[in-house]
Length: 172
Image (tube, rainbow, N blue to C red; front, side):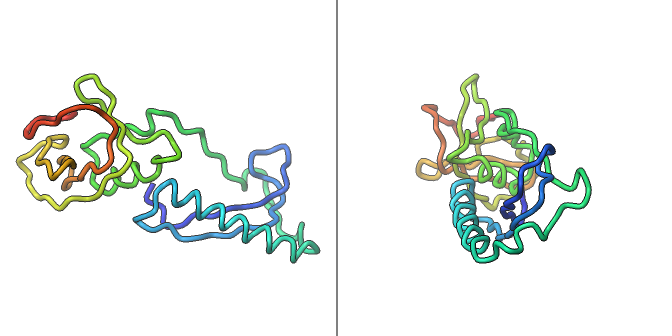
């Protein structure tokens, strides 16, 4: 979370994890507004552009190699617990978490009064006070709830739960 770029790599499968000969690599930038859905769409476009490039350069297909075992990347599979929001985190970390696992993935969440609240979209909310504990509901703006974080606050814009928040209630 908080990465500034990502990309896609086409490679020949071998016995290792992501260690085969590279056919093509292409990076693209991640903006603060990107979420899992927009990155997924950017990845599709990036991949299609790579396929077009590969078709034009088939002679060079095997010219790029990963020299050592272990040069490839290996990422563990995400689990539901990876998406748990802890309001003691700072605002940017929470925003990045929510953006990283929004649709089409399983979504970020927190537990309130024993009920799981799914969070699909948040935005930073400028709020400065040292007297309020992280997790405290600071205000309700229309249907959006503003919650104190470690360093500021966030506005919960898209949540899935039938629950009535009460100002001054803690949601940790």
